[in-house]
Image (cartoon, rainbow, N blue to C red):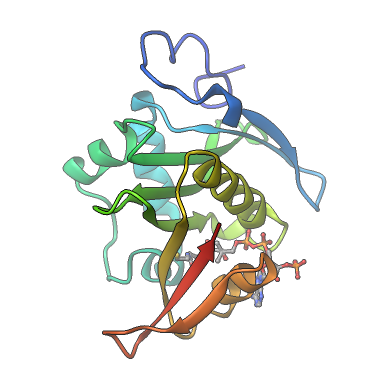
Length: 188
Ligand SMILES: CC(C)(COP(=O)(O)OP(=O)(O)OC[C@H]1O[C@@H](n2cnc3c(N)ncnc32)[C@H](O)[C@@H]1OP(=O)(O)O)[C@@H](O)C(=O)NCCC(=O)NCCS
């Protein structure tokens, strides 16, 4: 076990850590990943995960031409309260070094009933069910936490994300403000 795939003792003293979201998942190609809520100790893994995404996957995730996350963004991504901001990561132990291979998160909006979600899966891990596994878990957790709606802005040409949302029963509509985007939503 290592820092990425084992959660103890890193959760000690963390208020509200949702242990119920800790799991192991077997993917369609036979590989397994550890799934768990992100920890403050994941900053470097998160930095590497984002930096290692292909430029196209990064653009699809962030809608910007960024190459890496700033220190303040990394801090915000990994130091979360597990209520207004919930983030699930998947980590692999396959290679020589443990690797973060996916990240899915939501941030509750001001009305406290809706949240905005986003997700990214490492390029070598796409297309084998990992995005679906994380989004299902995130949605279930949002619903159990009393949220009514999870929504996300998706680039209009992002067939994989639109396909994933629709395969899970979500709706995809025109974006009210931006022609380049569509709005994906799950209602609970
Ligand atoms: C979009 C993304 C999260 C999907 O994750 P994934 O792990 O590759 O997707 P999965 O393997 O779980 O696919 C689940 C379903 O999504 C749909 N899907 C996946 N890839 C697809 C594609 N290229 N075209 C159409 N539908 C697709 C299918 O319905 C699929 O189910 P199936 O395999 O039974 O047909 C992933 O491709 C990714 O990280 N892309 C870059 C970042 C991004 O686009 N983020 C979205 C911003 S919110």
